[in-house]
Length: 307
Image (cartoon, rainbow, N blue to C red; front, side, top):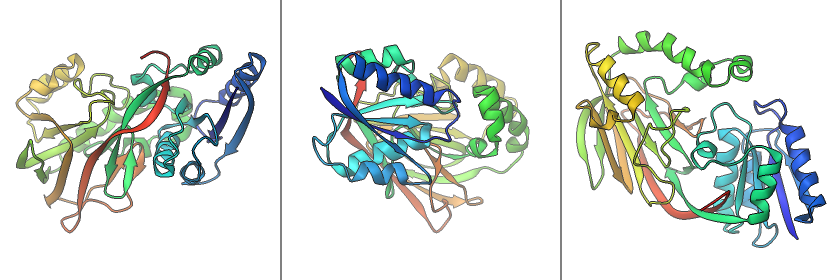
């Protein structure tokens, strides 16, 4: 029988999450899949990361991250740091849940229990930004602070629509601001460019948009990088249409490439916050700082419904 550890953020968005977890644990025991489950509740930032980071090999057969993107980030980071090689399962309780959606991870009790019973594991890459880790995305520039502007009650009641509404409200304001002058260096790409926003991802999905990075894979050993340059209002509709169609990487004002390592500096413009999996990097990107992003291949094992 398998022993599981459930690391739970009780303040995450889905209101019925605890009843789902209780049902999962009950079904695992009743079906003879698991004879015990330990539950750990987070109270503050880094609790999930710290709990996962002290795990020993074979201490548990699987660890379940229950929460939003931030909780998943912490559990994934902690598991990698623990060097325990314990497989990770995910129960999403956040608003968008890009990583879980990308891998079609089940969120209902019966399907989740069936997945644990089959116990198929996929090797997944992990990103590193300076001294932090990410499993889905790093973002900087225009509109990357939307997640922090949307009130929690709106997220709970409106879900993804809360983000999209805020996006439409903010877009006109942001388009009038001056852009960023970025120096971007990698083996595949070098440029000093006027940019509005940049994304560095491990999956195709960002902010609920499933085709944001259409060539991305969590297991290809590559980072997918998208840089949206400063564009005129006349070019914006065409860029948005291509984005919806998943063909935006063909737009002349969008740079899209894959790499294993990338270095980014801000040479002109105001300092910007850097988001990684819904968390803010401790130090903003300024003219005196920089970010280095790399990929760690096959860093984690994730339990999936099918390979």
